[in-house]
Length: 220
Image (tube, rainbow, N blue to C red):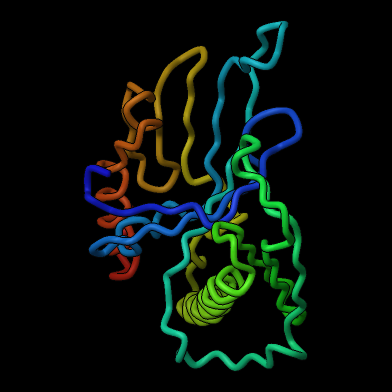
């Protein structure tokens, strides 16, 4: 919001007890992907859980994947009838007013790679399917890009980048100490609350400097 980015929830699944199991959000704004791509990876939260009556400390993780929005003409070949499985289901959200009475939500599964995307933000199944197709193209494009990056890194003898589902990139510690620290860059702040409220500028800028250093072959 501070950067005047626009965010829209495309799909959200609530967990059984509390919180969100997974969600897909589109963020649009000037250089949005360039700023946010460094958030890809596992984010580790350590806190006293409000759902634990014994008041014990819990560790939880959020896996974040940031994918660029690509043009539909991107060079990814898909036979939509043979390569992709289409499933429809009833959209639901937090609260009765968000529950859709028809099977308008769409899930697309790319059979060769196992990549899955979902969209349920529109009441029209046709619109959700069109959005899901764009999401799948973007995911497959990203898979190809990461494959090339890994091959280049292997030839250079360096490690490939930390990605979605990989190592922890940032720790958010709320108990007993209080701080947020990026595992890649070492950037650390002593007050977690502004970070949890979205103040990521320091982490984003330090990541961009760090990634440029890696590309140039420099050290952290």
